[in-house]
Length: 144
Image (cartoon, rainbow, N blue to C red; front, side, top):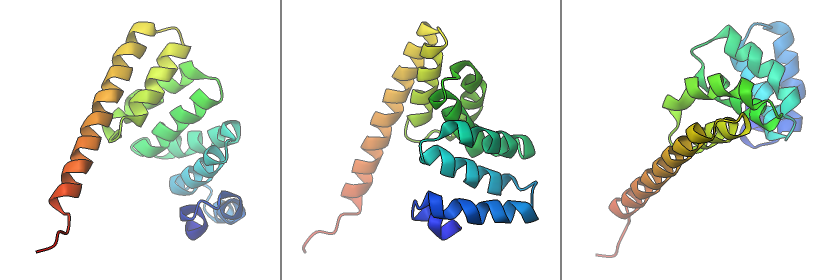
């Protein structure tokens, strides 16, 4: 199941994950993977119950909260997305969570918060790009 998931073969991973859940129905990690497989397959409404279960089983599993927030946004439930995205913001390394939160704020009528959060997203993205470029230059192999 993990190999299918890593290879982005979500349809092939789902039956295996579902079977594993029958043996371990309280596994936050299995619910997370199954929910993410539905989300990545562009079916957020099918992802929500699994991601809710994952976040409920392990509230410290911020990846589940981030994905649940994203699923809510994509399912047209922006207001429900906000607390989950806010809780997971500390894990945002590339600005994508801030972007999702800005979208949720905008769709739930909070324009000022959306603008500030979008600016933060752009700053994180620029910083991340600069860091990646610096690392690329630092570790570049050049001729002697």
